[in-house]
Amino acid sequence: MTTKSLAVLLFSCSLLLGCIDLADEPSSPDESEAEAALVYKPPVFQLAAPNHLLWIDVNGNARVQRYSTLIGLQQEWSYSQPWPYSAAGIAGDRLLWNDGAANAVLWKLDDRGAKVSQRTLSAPVPGAFYPVSLSLAPLAVNDCWQRSDEQRYFLMWNRFMNGERFGEAAIQLIDGSGHVYRTVFVTLPTAGVEPIWFGRGRDGYDRLVLRDLGVGSQVTSYRAELDATSPVTYRLSGVAFATAPSGHRAMSSGWVVSTLSVARGTYDQLLFSSRFAATDGGRGQLSWYTAPWTPVHIPLTGNDAITPVSGGNGWYARAFTGNPAECR
Image (tube, rainbow, N blue to C red; front, top):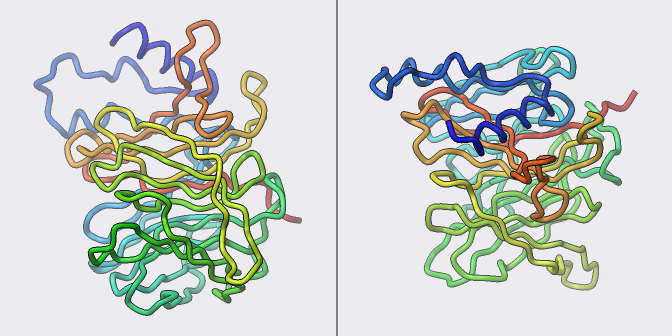
C-alpha cells in the first residue's frame, strides 16, 4: 500500500470512526477471489456518509444497507425481482425499480426493510423513457423528511436514444403515492452524455448530473433552475466537471450532513462503482465535495477525501441517500 493510499484510508477512518482492517489484506496476489472479496469490507458509516446504500447485480437482485450513527452497518435487506427488473434509486423510505418495460415501480419500505406497498408509474411518454434516479425534494437542504405519501420526490427518466444527437431527460415532481405534480422535459446540453441523477445540492439549488456514454467516467453537472414560463423547463448553468477513479464509472450523486467535528457541515457526494465488480469484491467509492466538484481535502496531506465501499463480487454500487432527520 502506498503512502498516499494509506493516508486516504486513515482519513476515511477518522471521519467515519471505523475503517478497513489492514490485517485482512491478502498476503499475496494469488489468493482466491472469494478471499479477496472479504478484503474490502464496508466501513463504519456515521452521519458523514449515506445512511442507505443501494447495491444491484445483473440478475434483478438488490441489497439495501442501512447505517446507524452509533453502530455503523446496522441492517442489510435483500430483494429479488425477475429479470429485466433493476433497482434504480433510493430516497426516504422509497425504493425505485425499472421494470424493464419503461415503467417505474415505487416500493414503500417499513423500518425493517419490508415492502409495505408498491405503485407503478408510467413513463412520461409511453415506451420512450426509463427511470434512472430518485431523490428527496425538500424545501431546503436540511429539511426533515416524512414517511407519509405527502413527502415529495424528484423522479428522473432518460429517453431511449434512437439516432438523436442530443439525449433528453424528463424530471417529475411526485409524492409518495406516485401522484405527478409536474413533468419537465430537458434536452441534454451536450452530445454523448446520459443523465444519472437529479436532485437538490448542498448549495440549495437543484442539480442535473450527467456521465459520458463511453465508460461513464466523466461527470458533467449543471445547476437547474425551474423556469415556469410556457413551456415549463429548467434553465441550466454553472457547468462543473469531475472524473471517476481509475477503473470506475459514475453511478449517482446526492448530499450528506456531517456532525463530526473534523468535517462538520453539508457535503455533495458522487458515487462511483468499479467496472470490474464481478471479480474485485464489488468495489465502490463515495467522493466528498464542498461544491460541484471541489474535493474535500485531507488535512496535512492534501489528498482527496473518499469513503470506500464494497458489496462483494458481482455487486455494483447503484445509488445512495443521506436522509436528513425524520419529521416528528
